[in-house]
Image (cartoon, rainbow, N blue to C red; front, side, top):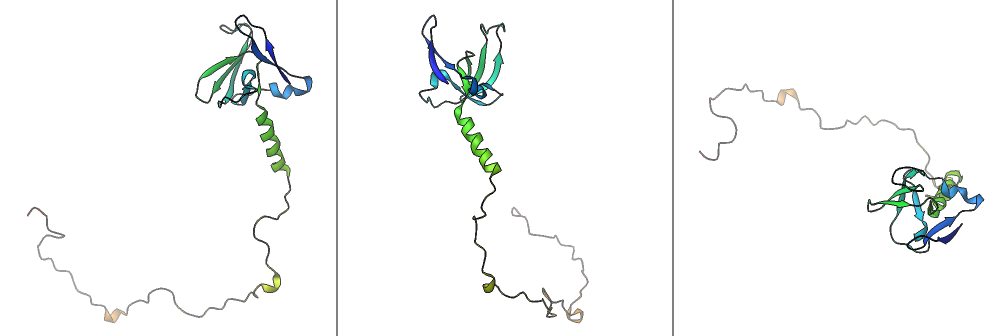
Length: 160
């Protein structure tokens, strides 16, 4: 893949020349990160995401083109030969594939304990002890019947 200058009426624009074996750079899907040719050599700090392809003959799209959005939400238009999928996408994809297919060595985490240092498991024997607060003896309970006094219940009001 090379970046070339294409003569245009006002000023030359940049475009990609993609080899036959690099066609995966042109498999656009909605929302994928793309790299415009004018930003190939320099990083402008903005990311561009593919939105839609407009074929030649679409009203307002002479010669066809790609519609993209950037991180600020602005809509941008690019010629059909001046856009590829960002190469960073393929690096992430390869890394994810490597993680997904790797078996792992099992060397992470705490190492296994030496069996000679482990305690012998014993059978649990109930002691017969009871849990919680013991019940009160019913003979010690004072049972009084509630007698209405006719007074108001609760805390008195503040204003009276």
